[in-house]
Amino acid sequence: MAIAFSSVCLMIVLAFSAMNGGASFVVGLLLALLPLGIWLPVILALDRMEPEPKNALILAFLWGAGVAALVSMVLNTLNFVVITDLLVSTDDGWYWTAVVGAPIVEEVLKAFLLFGMLWFRRHEINGLTDGIIYASMVGLGFAATENITYFIQAAEVDQLGFVFLMRAVIAPLLHPLCTAMTGIGVAVAAMSRPGMLRFTAPLIGLTGAIALHSLWNAASSRGIGGLASAYLIGLVVMIVLIVVVQRERRRLVGLILHYLPKYIPTGVVAMVDVQMLSSLKARKAAREWATSRGGRVSGTAMREYQQAATELAILHERAEHAAAEPAELENQRQALLWVMQRSRATFLPTAGTANLPWATTAH
Image (cartoon, rainbow, N blue to C red; front, side, top):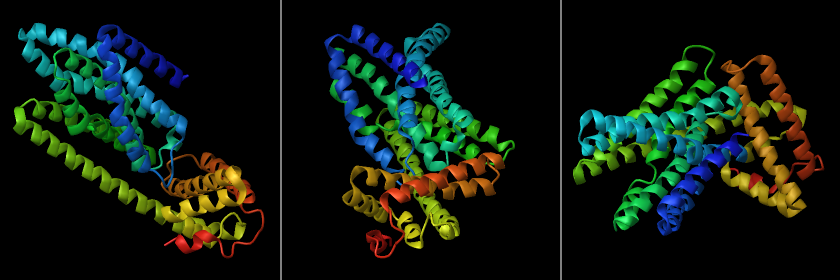
């Protein structure tokens, strides 16, 4: 339902842009899609240890591209009219709309999806990386739709090259970087014990997103020097996020090494599997081996096994932090063990684990 609603909103935005842009709409649409071909794979590659469900990622992207973009178009226009009436000057109206009105409107609208996931799909947010990825998907969707409008307007005044350089080359990750602040806050809340932090962390993250967005818009409107400052700010934020993702990956490997060996006596995991699950290179080798041995079914089973085993390690951490009810955690644990047992029986029908090919690539 949410995906369908977001898709309808996106269609409305595209129809409105097509009616107003004419021939420039096609050019704007194609140029807006170009950055997605680069940055979507990059963002998705951040979460190779525990990939998020495709339907959740699609919803995040469509929410940003559809719902958030459509509503922000209306509210930003109203803000501009009100602010301009108060300030008289059109230039001042545009400036204060960009620095104050737009950051609040856009970041709040993008945050609704993340807050909704925190409420309805908390179990999908297992670390800071998950929050960053979902937030980045929302931001990429929003940026793509917004860029269409900017490119259409630029084409009408012969400034398309400059605007494309600014929005698609110099600052293609403005919205993902800003919304990632909210994503981190939501992830902190999802992993926290019941208490005030579950309420304050998302709000602090949202405040950070609004502040970063406002600072960027204010700095980039101050000429070359301001633009350089804005770009430097964005670069620093990106580096910080990359460090966070790398630390999260090491944390996840630590959880796998700590918790999964306890399940060796059950037969759903062997020590060689624990080693495989701790390395991206070994995981890939295992999937390739399973596919070559048993076709697509076996390869899919290996992928499901890796996913379930990783989530099992994360589940134990959530249990230690009391991030969910014990009965809920136990139900999830039993479900994950069932998936691991079923998948293992598919790609490894015999009991032996000696000389498995990924054992030599696990380090």
